[in-house]
Image 1 (spheres, rainbow, N blue to C red):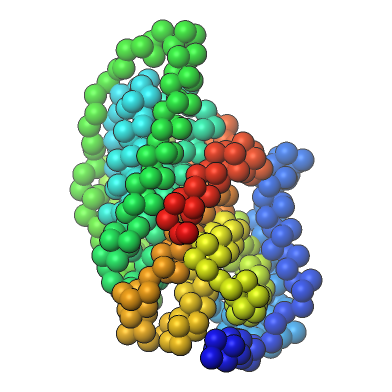
Image 2: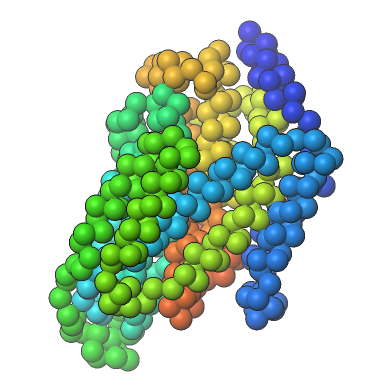
Length: 436
C-alpha cells in the first residue's frame, strides 16, 4: 500500500516537464555571487548586482517560457515575489514611522531581555514585522560597540526562531494554517522546542555580550552609564502595522492593494522628523528587491526537482520524523522556506493517503498523527536562520544594519562563524530531544 501511494504521488508531479539539470546553475551562481562578490569586487557589485540578478533570473524565465513552454511556474514565481516584496516593503515603510528611543550602552542583561521579548513579539506581528520594528532601536542601543554577533543573534531569535508559536509568526506556518492546520496547533505542539532553543540561544548571546561589554567598558567608560530613556514616537503607525498583518488573511490581489495603500498613507502622514530620527533610507529595500527577484526566478528549477524527487527520496529513506526535520531544514536554509514546507507537507499527506488540498485531511493528520508535521514545521522555521537567504527578514536586517555604516558578517562569515558552530549543534540537540 505504501509503495502505491509513492507511485501516485510521483505520478502527480510527473505531468510537468522537469528542466534540464544544468538549469540549477543560475541559482547556485546567484548564491555564489551574493557570497563572494562583495569580497572580490565590492564597488563593482554595488553598482551591478541588479544586472546580475536580472540576467540570471531572466535566463531561467526565458528557458521556462520558450524551451519548456511553461507559463504556469514563472507566473506563480512572479506572484510569490510580488507578494513577498509588497509585504516586506509595506512593513519596512510603516515600521520606519515608529521611533523607539532607547538607552544607549545597553548592558548584556538588557540586550538579552530585548531579544527574548522580540522573539515573543514575532508571534504577534510576524518575524518580518518584529524585525523591521526592532532592528533600528537594536542598532541605537548598541551603537558604541555593535559587532557581528549582535546582528546574527537578532536574526536567529527575532527574524526566525521566535515566530514558531503562531501561524502569524512565520510564512510556512501560515501556509499550514491556510491548508487546515488549527490556529493554536503550533502553540500546543511547538512551545517546548521553541522554549529550549530560545533559552539556549539567549544564554549563548548573553555570554558573548558579557565578554564584549567588559572589553568595551574598559576602552570607553561611558558605556558604564546608560544614557537616555525609553519612549515611543509615531504610535499612530501601530494601526497601519496591524492593518498590514490583517491583510495577510485577504485573498490576492486585494491583500497587496491594502498593504500598498496602508504604506502610502503611513508615509504621507508620518512626520518627517521621525523618518530622520530613524535615518530612513530606501537602500535596504532596493537591495532586497533586486536580489530576491533573481532568487525567486532562479530557484524554480530547484523547487521543481524537490517536488519531483521528494517521493523517491522518502521511499529510499523511510522518512521518519528526523528525516522530515533535516530535509525540510537544510532545503529551507537555501530555498524559500514557505514552498519547502508546503512540498514536504504535500509529501506527508500523500504518505497518509490524503491530500494537502483538502483541509479535513490536513486537520486529521495534525490531530491524530502530528509527529511528521511537527518535524516539518520546526525544520522550516528554525533552519531558516542558517543563512541570510533562509528567510526574507534575514537579508533585510543585514541590509538595514549595513546601511547604518556597520560592518556585517559576510555570507560565508555568517555561516562559518555563527550558523555552523553555534546554531547547528543546538538544532541537532532540539531534533534529538523532541523528534526521536
